[in-house]
Image 1 (cartoon, rainbow, N blue to C red):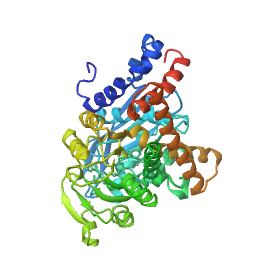
Image 2: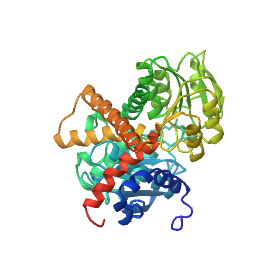
Image 3: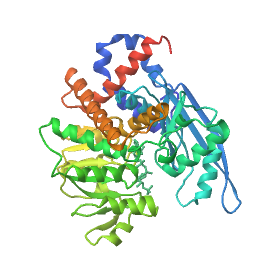
Image 4: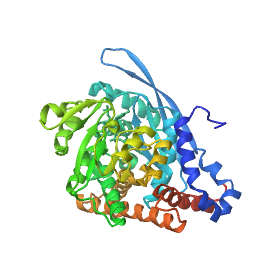
Length: 433
Ligand code: NDP
């Protein structure tokens, strides 16, 4: 707080983790003696740079680029790039910090990082996005590499942007297949990477529900967002026998009590790059309303926020509790603020935090790195099987920590502790780093 008084999101993420580490710190006093927490919350490196670019009308613009290389104790830096007007150092640091524990939970050897820019790709032409990506990579290329730091996508960075970034890197540094993940399938991408975060979220949610002797089949689900995570979460939910009744964007949401057809959302968002309000024009049982989907009062069982940070506040969490939802698992990063999480706990809503529930994306990114090193492409089924195994293992690790420290089904604390213990052990073994 003293060093970064204005970094509200970063502080929020750090306090949420530190609060839950008490049981492991009591059991492992050496981490306190070694001042490990102070080292953990300080990024190894922060890179900030100017990104000048030219719009189609010949005007010059400048945005701010970031890469926070947070922790490399268990492997090379790994984490996405976000392009959104709200991106600033606090947001990138919060995401990078969360990424350390998330990557640790996957069981794969990857450290934590995050980056991005306050550039808004919405409404820009392909040529403008390409020129921005080329300028962004002109600086970023100095700091990344297949064994050093491997960026991927996040909000505003999908297949198109990764393609432009990869092409720009190649011109500057030569061909290095493994320098970015989320690549197109024709140049080293992995099958199932596009689906990974959404599918993984459902594998995790399914594991959590099963552990309670309950079943996902037949459940009604509310999803927010209509982007990469939301679309494939909707698809997998349907495949597992549940019904998704909402999707949203930053203007409003669609509610269809008969169930959302993910193929139509995919067409609108991925192909036409349109707004979600379009959906109601194509499906007669669906209605579009402005505002937040979390203000909609309906009876349902499972909440899956898949849009953005802090989308659920205390009041909306109270609506979730009142509506009878029993499970909330986060596809987005930190969509629930601290007060909302308290409401879940007070009302016995079982809570799967983003760093555990949405780790499927980065897990398959790491599998993409493995395929690139092997010069092989695995089948969709092979990658999907790995993903399922990893997500079930993440739930199992969180549950094991929960049981070990008698946390009473606090899977948030369980995930934080399980992710932290591995990183802490690696940092300790490597001396004063
Ligand atoms: P996309 O850019 O594909 O989609 C984001 C969606 O969320 C869009 O529908 C967007 O609507 C909506 N949204 C953004 N801001 C708001 C807001 N303030 N209120 C309501 N809706 C909003 O991003 P992703 O699906 O990739 O990412 C979604 C979340 O999941 C993020 O928190 C991301 O960090 C996290 N995540 C993503 C992973 C991935 O593999 N993609 C991996 C792990 C986590 P609009 O078009 O109006 O902006």
